[in-house]
Image (cartoon, rainbow over all chains, first blue to last red; front, side):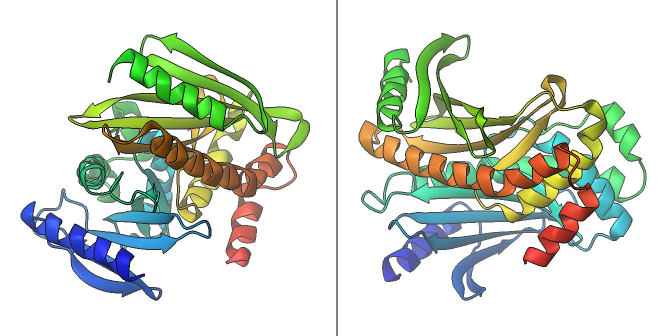
Length: 164
Length: 168
Protein backbone atom coordinates (compact mmCIF):
# COMPACT_ATOMS: atom_id res chain seq x y z
CA UNK A 1 0.00 0.00 0.00
CA UNK A 2 2.86 2.33 0.86
CA UNK A 3 4.36 1.74 -2.57
CA UNK A 4 1.05 2.53 -4.22
CA UNK A 5 0.49 5.67 -2.19
CA UNK A 6 3.97 6.65 -3.29
CA UNK A 7 2.80 6.17 -6.87
CA UNK A 8 -0.10 8.59 -6.30
CA UNK A 9 2.27 11.06 -4.66
CA UNK A 10 4.57 10.81 -7.66
CA UNK A 11 1.64 11.40 -10.00
CA UNK A 12 0.55 14.45 -7.97
CA UNK A 13 4.08 15.85 -8.02
CA UNK A 14 4.53 15.35 -11.76
CA UNK A 15 1.05 16.76 -12.45
CA UNK A 16 1.93 19.97 -10.65
CA UNK A 17 4.75 20.52 -13.17
CA UNK A 18 2.12 20.22 -15.90
CA UNK A 19 -0.18 22.71 -14.20
CA UNK A 20 -2.70 20.18 -12.87
CA UNK A 21 -3.18 20.61 -9.14
CA UNK A 22 -4.18 17.27 -7.69
CA UNK A 23 -4.82 17.18 -3.96
CA UNK A 24 -4.86 14.00 -1.88
CA UNK A 25 -8.24 12.70 -0.77
CA UNK A 26 -9.88 9.48 0.33
CA UNK A 27 -12.81 7.95 -1.52
CA UNK A 28 -14.61 4.93 -0.07
CA UNK A 29 -11.62 4.28 2.17
CA UNK A 30 -9.13 4.39 -0.69
CA UNK A 31 -6.33 6.87 -1.25
CA UNK A 32 -7.25 9.20 -4.09
CA UNK A 33 -6.16 12.29 -5.96
CA UNK A 34 -8.67 14.95 -6.95
CA UNK A 35 -8.22 17.90 -9.33
CA UNK A 36 -10.90 20.50 -10.00
CA UNK A 37 -11.13 22.34 -13.32
CA UNK A 38 -11.67 26.12 -13.29
CA UNK A 39 -15.35 26.85 -12.69
CA UNK A 40 -15.28 30.05 -14.72
CA UNK A 41 -14.92 28.12 -17.99
CA UNK A 42 -18.20 26.37 -18.71
CA UNK A 43 -16.61 24.36 -21.52
CA UNK A 44 -14.29 22.50 -19.16
CA UNK A 45 -15.23 19.34 -17.26
CA UNK A 46 -15.80 19.66 -13.52
CA UNK A 47 -13.25 17.46 -11.79
CA UNK A 48 -10.94 14.51 -12.16
CA UNK A 49 -10.31 11.76 -9.62
CA UNK A 50 -7.56 9.15 -9.62
CA UNK A 51 -7.83 6.09 -7.37
CA UNK A 52 -5.92 2.86 -7.07
CA UNK A 53 -7.13 -0.66 -6.53
CA UNK A 54 -5.19 -3.80 -5.70
CA UNK A 55 -6.25 -6.87 -7.66
CA UNK A 56 -5.99 -10.35 -6.18
CA UNK A 57 -3.20 -11.41 -8.52
CA UNK A 58 -0.84 -8.68 -7.28
CA UNK A 59 -1.57 -6.38 -10.15
CA UNK A 60 -2.85 -2.87 -9.66
CA UNK A 61 -5.59 -0.81 -11.27
CA UNK A 62 -5.26 2.94 -11.55
CA UNK A 63 -8.69 4.47 -12.22
CA UNK A 64 -9.32 7.93 -13.68
CA UNK A 65 -12.85 9.34 -13.37
CA UNK A 66 -13.67 12.69 -14.97
CA UNK A 67 -16.96 14.40 -14.12
CA UNK A 68 -18.16 15.98 -17.36
CA UNK A 69 -21.46 17.24 -15.88
CA UNK A 70 -23.05 16.93 -12.48
CA UNK A 71 -26.29 18.16 -10.93
CA UNK A 72 -28.38 17.26 -13.97
CA UNK A 73 -32.13 16.97 -13.51
CA UNK A 74 -34.06 13.92 -14.67
CA UNK A 75 -34.74 15.20 -18.19
CA UNK A 76 -31.17 16.37 -18.69
CA UNK A 77 -29.88 13.01 -17.44
CA UNK A 78 -32.17 11.14 -19.86
CA UNK A 79 -31.01 13.31 -22.75
CA UNK A 80 -27.34 12.93 -21.89
CA UNK A 81 -27.79 9.17 -21.39
CA UNK A 82 -29.18 8.95 -24.91
CA UNK A 83 -26.01 10.59 -26.24
CA UNK A 84 -23.52 8.30 -24.46
CA UNK A 85 -23.70 5.72 -27.25
CA UNK A 86 -22.63 8.32 -29.82
CA UNK A 87 -19.90 9.61 -27.53
CA UNK A 88 -18.41 6.15 -27.04
CA UNK A 89 -18.41 4.99 -30.64
CA UNK A 90 -14.90 6.05 -31.57
CA UNK A 91 -13.36 6.41 -28.13
CA UNK A 92 -10.32 4.27 -27.52
CA UNK A 93 -9.28 5.47 -24.07
CA UNK A 94 -12.19 5.71 -21.65
CA UNK A 95 -15.92 5.22 -21.64
CA UNK A 96 -18.71 7.76 -21.04
CA UNK A 97 -21.69 6.87 -18.87
CA UNK A 98 -24.49 8.82 -17.23
CA UNK A 99 -25.78 7.97 -13.80
CA UNK A 100 -27.45 9.77 -10.89
CA UNK A 101 -27.56 13.18 -12.51
CA UNK A 102 -23.99 13.16 -13.79
CA UNK A 103 -22.02 12.30 -16.91
CA UNK A 104 -18.67 10.64 -16.31
CA UNK A 105 -15.73 9.56 -18.42
CA UNK A 106 -13.91 6.71 -16.77
CA UNK A 107 -10.73 4.88 -17.64
CA UNK A 108 -8.67 2.20 -15.89
CA UNK A 109 -5.06 1.10 -16.30
CA UNK A 110 -3.88 -2.32 -15.31
CA UNK A 111 -0.34 -2.15 -13.94
CA UNK A 112 2.06 -5.02 -13.71
CA UNK A 113 3.61 -4.71 -10.27
CA UNK A 114 6.64 -6.66 -11.40
CA UNK A 115 7.53 -3.72 -13.57
CA UNK A 116 5.58 -0.83 -12.05
CA UNK A 117 7.39 1.80 -14.09
CA UNK A 118 5.88 0.39 -17.25
CA UNK A 119 2.62 1.95 -18.25
CA UNK A 120 2.68 4.46 -15.42
CA UNK A 121 4.01 7.95 -15.74
CA UNK A 122 4.52 8.64 -19.44
CA UNK A 123 1.47 6.66 -20.47
CA UNK A 124 -0.53 7.98 -17.50
CA UNK A 125 -0.02 11.63 -18.40
CA UNK A 126 -0.60 11.06 -22.10
CA UNK A 127 -3.80 9.18 -21.28
CA UNK A 128 -4.91 11.82 -18.79
CA UNK A 129 -4.35 14.54 -21.37
CA UNK A 130 -6.32 12.59 -23.99
CA UNK A 131 -9.15 11.89 -21.53
CA UNK A 132 -9.38 15.53 -20.43
CA UNK A 133 -9.52 16.55 -24.10
CA UNK A 134 -12.30 14.06 -24.85
CA UNK A 135 -14.24 15.08 -21.74
CA UNK A 136 -13.99 18.75 -22.75
CA UNK A 137 -15.10 17.89 -26.32
CA UNK A 138 -18.10 16.04 -24.94
CA UNK A 139 -19.03 18.87 -22.59
CA UNK A 140 -18.80 21.49 -25.35
CA UNK A 141 -20.99 19.43 -27.67
CA UNK A 142 -23.56 18.58 -25.00
CA UNK A 143 -23.87 22.07 -23.47
CA UNK A 144 -26.64 23.16 -25.89
CA UNK A 145 -28.55 19.99 -25.00
CA UNK A 146 -28.12 20.47 -21.27
CA UNK A 147 -29.13 24.13 -21.58
CA UNK A 148 -32.23 23.15 -23.54
CA UNK A 149 -31.12 25.02 -26.66
CA UNK A 150 -31.09 21.84 -28.76
CA UNK A 151 -33.10 18.61 -28.59
CA UNK A 152 -31.52 15.16 -28.82
CA UNK A 153 -32.81 14.83 -32.38
CA UNK A 154 -31.28 18.16 -33.40
CA UNK A 155 -27.96 17.26 -31.80
CA UNK A 156 -27.95 13.84 -33.46
CA UNK A 157 -28.71 15.47 -36.78
CA UNK A 158 -25.97 18.01 -36.26
CA UNK A 159 -23.58 15.17 -35.38
CA UNK A 160 -21.81 14.43 -32.15
CA UNK A 161 -18.35 12.94 -32.09
CA UNK A 162 -15.55 12.28 -29.64
CA UNK A 163 -12.41 10.21 -30.00
CA UNK A 164 -8.86 10.04 -28.70
CA UNK B 1 6.15 1.42 -34.48
CA UNK B 2 7.75 -0.82 -37.07
CA UNK B 3 5.40 -3.24 -38.74
CA UNK B 4 7.48 -6.23 -37.64
CA UNK B 5 7.56 -5.06 -34.02
CA UNK B 6 3.77 -4.82 -33.96
CA UNK B 7 3.51 -8.30 -35.39
CA UNK B 8 6.01 -9.59 -32.84
CA UNK B 9 3.77 -8.31 -30.02
CA UNK B 10 0.64 -9.77 -31.52
CA UNK B 11 2.23 -13.17 -32.17
CA UNK B 12 3.54 -13.26 -28.57
CA UNK B 13 0.05 -12.47 -27.32
CA UNK B 14 -1.52 -15.15 -29.51
CA UNK B 15 0.90 -17.72 -28.10
CA UNK B 16 0.27 -16.66 -24.49
CA UNK B 17 -3.48 -16.60 -25.00
CA UNK B 18 -3.58 -20.09 -26.50
CA UNK B 19 -5.72 -21.59 -23.72
CA UNK B 20 -9.40 -21.47 -24.57
CA UNK B 21 -8.78 -19.91 -27.96
CA UNK B 22 -10.42 -21.64 -30.92
CA UNK B 23 -8.57 -19.76 -33.66
CA UNK B 24 -5.87 -17.10 -33.77
CA UNK B 25 -4.39 -15.30 -36.75
CA UNK B 26 -2.34 -12.16 -37.29
CA UNK B 27 -3.40 -10.34 -40.44
CA UNK B 28 -2.30 -7.15 -42.15
CA UNK B 29 -4.88 -4.43 -42.64
CA UNK B 30 -4.73 -0.87 -43.97
CA UNK B 31 -4.33 0.30 -40.36
CA UNK B 32 -1.57 -2.18 -39.51
CA UNK B 33 -1.32 -5.68 -38.11
CA UNK B 34 -4.34 -7.04 -36.25
CA UNK B 35 -4.68 -10.19 -34.18
CA UNK B 36 -8.00 -11.93 -34.69
CA UNK B 37 -9.08 -14.49 -32.11
CA UNK B 38 -12.19 -16.54 -31.59
CA UNK B 39 -13.04 -18.14 -28.28
CA UNK B 40 -15.95 -19.76 -26.51
CA UNK B 41 -18.79 -17.53 -25.38
CA UNK B 42 -20.01 -17.37 -21.78
CA UNK B 43 -23.56 -17.18 -23.18
CA UNK B 44 -23.83 -20.63 -24.76
CA UNK B 45 -21.79 -23.46 -26.18
CA UNK B 46 -22.89 -22.73 -29.73
CA UNK B 47 -21.84 -19.09 -29.55
CA UNK B 48 -18.36 -17.67 -30.06
CA UNK B 49 -16.79 -14.36 -29.17
CA UNK B 50 -14.52 -12.65 -31.72
CA UNK B 51 -11.61 -10.57 -30.51
CA UNK B 52 -9.54 -8.06 -32.42
CA UNK B 53 -6.30 -6.81 -30.92
CA UNK B 54 -4.37 -4.05 -32.66
CA UNK B 55 -1.23 -2.17 -31.77
CA UNK B 56 -0.08 1.07 -33.35
CA UNK B 57 1.85 4.28 -32.68
CA UNK B 58 0.02 6.77 -30.48
CA UNK B 59 2.40 9.53 -29.43
CA UNK B 60 6.15 9.92 -29.24
CA UNK B 61 7.56 6.97 -27.34
CA UNK B 62 4.15 5.38 -26.77
CA UNK B 63 2.00 2.94 -28.60
CA UNK B 64 -1.59 1.93 -28.10
CA UNK B 65 -3.13 -1.50 -27.76
CA UNK B 66 -6.83 -1.69 -28.59
CA UNK B 67 -8.88 -4.77 -27.76
CA UNK B 68 -12.43 -5.25 -29.01
CA UNK B 69 -14.52 -8.25 -28.02
CA UNK B 70 -17.46 -8.62 -30.39
CA UNK B 71 -20.16 -9.96 -28.10
CA UNK B 72 -23.54 -9.64 -29.88
CA UNK B 73 -24.46 -9.44 -33.55
CA UNK B 74 -27.51 -9.16 -35.82
CA UNK B 75 -29.23 -6.87 -33.34
CA UNK B 76 -32.70 -5.78 -34.48
CA UNK B 77 -32.89 -2.03 -35.05
CA UNK B 78 -36.01 -1.76 -32.87
CA UNK B 79 -33.87 -2.80 -29.87
CA UNK B 80 -31.38 0.07 -30.25
CA UNK B 81 -33.18 2.47 -27.89
CA UNK B 82 -33.60 0.09 -24.95
CA UNK B 83 -30.21 -1.45 -25.60
CA UNK B 84 -28.56 1.98 -25.42
CA UNK B 85 -30.16 2.59 -22.02
CA UNK B 86 -28.98 -0.77 -20.69
CA UNK B 87 -25.46 -0.36 -22.09
CA UNK B 88 -25.16 3.05 -20.39
CA UNK B 89 -26.24 1.56 -17.05
CA UNK B 90 -23.79 -1.33 -17.40
CA UNK B 91 -20.91 0.93 -18.44
CA UNK B 92 -21.52 3.07 -15.35
CA UNK B 93 -20.84 -0.03 -13.25
CA UNK B 94 -17.82 -1.37 -15.16
CA UNK B 95 -14.44 0.00 -14.19
CA UNK B 96 -12.36 -1.29 -17.09
CA UNK B 97 -13.63 -0.85 -20.65
CA UNK B 98 -17.18 -0.52 -21.88
CA UNK B 99 -19.78 -1.86 -24.29
CA UNK B 100 -20.38 0.00 -27.54
CA UNK B 101 -23.38 -0.39 -29.82
CA UNK B 102 -22.22 -0.05 -33.40
CA UNK B 103 -25.51 0.65 -35.10
CA UNK B 104 -24.36 0.36 -38.73
CA UNK B 105 -23.01 -3.13 -38.13
CA UNK B 106 -25.83 -3.99 -35.67
CA UNK B 107 -23.21 -5.35 -33.28
CA UNK B 108 -22.19 -4.76 -29.68
CA UNK B 109 -18.53 -4.93 -28.83
CA UNK B 110 -16.64 -4.45 -25.60
CA UNK B 111 -13.75 -2.05 -25.93
CA UNK B 112 -10.64 -1.22 -23.94
CA UNK B 113 -7.35 0.37 -24.96
CA UNK B 114 -4.18 1.26 -23.17
CA UNK B 115 -0.88 2.96 -23.82
CA UNK B 116 2.52 1.44 -23.28
CA UNK B 117 6.00 2.85 -23.35
CA UNK B 118 7.80 1.66 -26.45
CA UNK B 119 10.70 0.50 -24.30
CA UNK B 120 8.46 -2.03 -22.52
CA UNK B 121 9.58 -5.62 -22.94
CA UNK B 122 7.37 -7.68 -25.20
CA UNK B 123 6.72 -10.24 -22.46
CA UNK B 124 5.79 -7.59 -19.88
CA UNK B 125 3.51 -5.81 -22.34
CA UNK B 126 1.86 -9.11 -23.23
CA UNK B 127 1.29 -9.87 -19.52
CA UNK B 128 -0.47 -6.54 -18.99
CA UNK B 129 -2.54 -7.11 -22.10
CA UNK B 130 -3.58 -10.59 -21.00
CA UNK B 131 -4.55 -9.31 -17.54
CA UNK B 132 -6.63 -6.61 -19.20
CA UNK B 133 -8.26 -9.14 -21.51
CA UNK B 134 -9.06 -11.34 -18.50
CA UNK B 135 -10.81 -8.41 -16.80
CA UNK B 136 -12.63 -7.58 -20.01
CA UNK B 137 -13.84 -11.18 -20.33
CA UNK B 138 -15.21 -11.05 -16.77
CA UNK B 139 -17.06 -7.85 -17.59
CA UNK B 140 -18.45 -9.30 -20.82
CA UNK B 141 -19.65 -12.42 -18.99
CA UNK B 142 -21.08 -10.70 -15.89
CA UNK B 143 -22.56 -7.61 -17.49
CA UNK B 144 -23.24 -9.03 -20.95
CA UNK B 145 -25.79 -11.46 -19.54
CA UNK B 146 -28.14 -8.49 -19.04
CA UNK B 147 -27.77 -7.53 -22.69
CA UNK B 148 -28.49 -11.12 -23.70
CA UNK B 149 -31.62 -11.23 -21.54
CA UNK B 150 -32.81 -7.94 -23.04
CA UNK B 151 -32.15 -9.06 -26.61
CA UNK B 152 -33.95 -12.35 -26.02
CA UNK B 153 -36.98 -10.47 -24.76
CA UNK B 154 -36.73 -11.96 -21.29
CA UNK B 155 -36.40 -8.54 -19.65
CA UNK B 156 -37.23 -4.96 -20.60
CA UNK B 157 -34.67 -2.17 -20.15
CA UNK B 158 -36.69 -0.94 -17.18
CA UNK B 159 -36.51 -4.38 -15.55
CA UNK B 160 -32.74 -4.57 -16.15
CA UNK B 161 -32.22 -1.14 -14.56
CA UNK B 162 -34.34 -2.17 -11.59
CA UNK B 163 -32.39 -5.41 -11.17
CA UNK B 164 -29.06 -3.58 -11.42
CA UNK B 165 -30.24 -1.12 -8.79
CA UNK B 166 -31.20 -3.98 -6.48
CA UNK B 167 -27.79 -5.60 -6.96
CA UNK B 168 -26.05 -2.60 -5.44
